[in-house]
Length: 271
Image 1 (cartoon, helix red, strand yellow):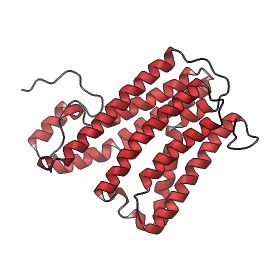
Image 2 (spheres, rainbow, N blue to C red):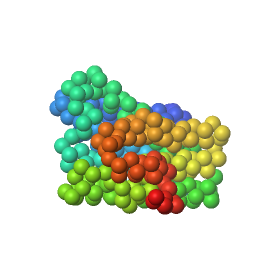
Image 3 (tube, one colour):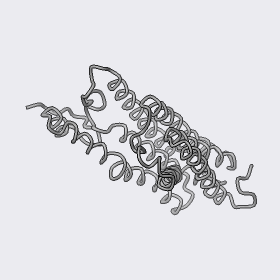
Image 4 (spheres, rainbow, N blue to C red):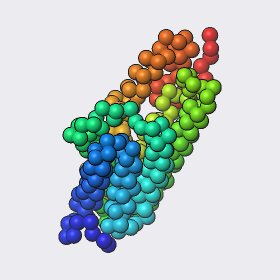
């Protein structure tokens, strides 16, 4: 096995090595971005950190089937979402979140370090699995978790595609999307995201390594859920939508009849 940190135990290599790679990428990205006063590298570096930490911890692992599975799930997710986010930033010309902070190197660095923390905590189940040399064989828990991940991946991908296609149509300028998956959830992409990380954590729990490892793995979907529902995701988008369409009767009806996150499978009868 190749070593990220020579002489260190495998779990320490996985967790510590991932942190070194992750925050190293953020620091390099910040240095270039701060010098050029641009945020266009931000999502790219986030995706690169996910892929690099997953790949490097796998390279230092025993390369067991479960380690290959969980590394593949993380890399597939980051490749798809990373390409989508980077393409969106270059298409839109920037990201309004960074309009002011990109001119303040110190505050800009905080954003990059927060991204590093997001990467490490979110991908923690992968680092944990890759840090255990002796594991049980793949079983029904792994397959059920993989199925959950697939459902989440399809949901998030379809929701992102539908919204992108909707916004690219000039006829929809100034309108809110209420078709496709967006007709049964106001944030179906986030629902899919949460499902995926529940699936990734499920693979780690299926390893049956120790109660501590299982609990630590569950921090990932809990963190993602908290982040999306209480901080940077849904609250901000809901506020923006209310400011833009809050006075429209159609939007009020949409908001009243459409769940915020978990899709409604039974259609609402219109009065």
